[in-house]
Image (cartoon, rainbow, N blue to C red; front, top):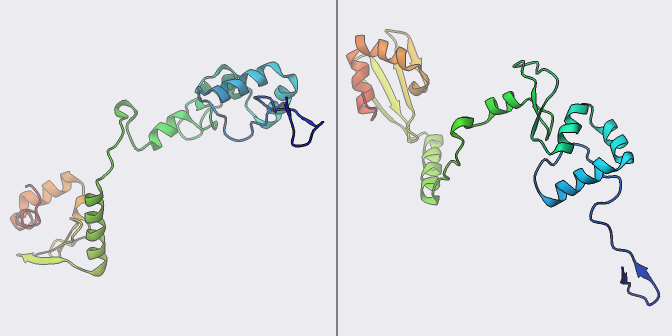
Length: 194
């Protein structure tokens, strides 16, 4: 307790964890002192357990949160069939890993581009949007190389019209390239290693 601004008044300092914690939405599963205090408070307070029981539909999720776990076994996922779920938001752990940009076995921090590299990439995109392109023909093949490195290829004889040749499966590129030496020359001129 401490003295307030006026003499005679006493201000009561708030406790570390306010009574009857509201944990609606995402559950903080971290190891921070605040998260641990919340878990301890809910574990010992009957009123908070009653309230959280109404806020969190899955009792296994609440029990896992109280234990401090990151994942728990809950309802079966309709997409992948897994029962492993994240305590934080109740989402499927398997689907979360699939949607993650990195393979979990090789989860490393992706280095950011330098400022110069970022500016160069912006300049390439600006040039492409402005219509700058290097166009050439080899035999029946017409090609356009854009500043971003995209290669667009057309061949009326074979009915091939691709705005981004890199998106064509490599097996198909190899199949066409074995019978079409002009395509190989187009890719070589565009800077592809063939």
